[in-house]
Image 1: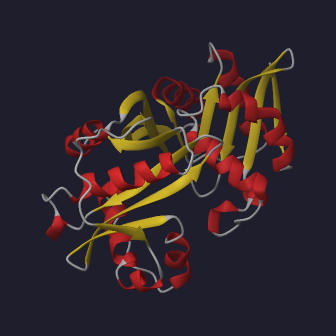
Image 2: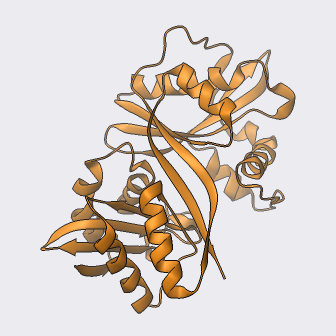
Image 3: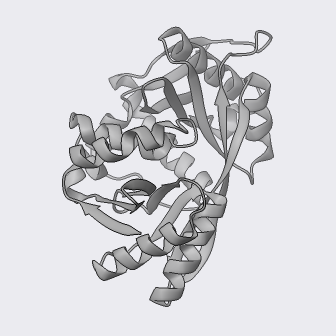
Length: 285
């Protein structure tokens, strides 16, 4: 088993793109980031590939495991077939290269295997931060109501987007981060973000966070507490999912927190079907 680390995102893309596309929907996170880096159009914040860790574990010239880390986030992985040997190869290679990994996000069996090997070698403790389910939609259910006025977010929405973003992250991660003064973070976020209006008031948001050759990833689905229970989340996701399909994508993909049964139920009613379970595991001393 051979470990390889890459300094050039285009070389990494060439070696791993077809491997990842064999399971496009499950690999939306790693594929979407890889495409961002390869195109080089967006280097805001963590998106600059100059700061990434890109690696593979190969056997006989065939890539068996793909790894991409976009600091400050944890490493994302995809493995082909039995991954015991490739996981050890990757962990050993990262440690030898003096690369510190804060955590892992991927399919749950692979995430647990890497966490066990890497943490045992580094004297760290793995702790599950989030249990997620990956869903895919190929058609929006016809009976899902798509109420309200659906439109792209724009500069006028910056009056509330920072507060809704931090509210979303607080609920998703239990982090209590305040709204920061750097407006560029939020200005960048409204690209590919859509809002739902009811009675002239914005009541919900959703965003296309990543795109691949034939799929779009829907994220940042948020309704503030004072507008919940009125079907706005279902409506904005149905609107955005249909737009993605109308724009030529064959499917839409989204991640849900398994601790939130309401959102999991909502998405299935819209037409999303579960395809895999994923774990986010963080490593601590």
